[in-house]
Length: 130
Image 1 (cartoon, rainbow, N blue to C red):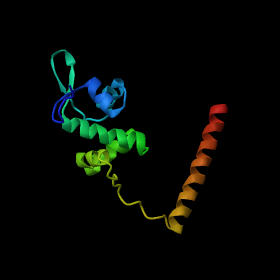
Image 2: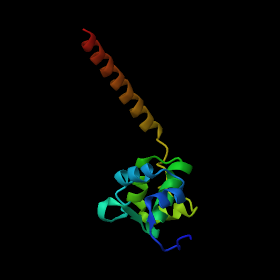
Image 3: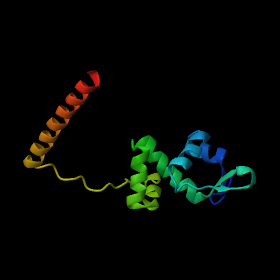
Image 4: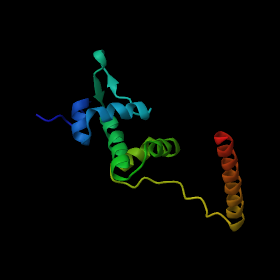
């Protein structure tokens, strides 16, 4: 008999539903502070329907959209949990608008800084060899 949509899920049920191994769910708990399943005596995890929705979004972003863990953390920090849930429902995760392209003056300054850094590295390499 299948559980209802509002029933809590064990880690094995959650893992099966999300198509990820159980150890991945445990790992995600260490990387994403917003993933907090209820734990019973003995440390047994139970995932609420809302936890599954968030996990579905995390899985989609990491596995399907190519986000990094830091990328998902940043998305959560900037746009909140609703953005992750929406991603799990197939809605596009919105990102902040890209920074405007660097002006010619910025590029010149960056190239000059790069040359300075390369020069400093060469001096340090010489000191380490000598």
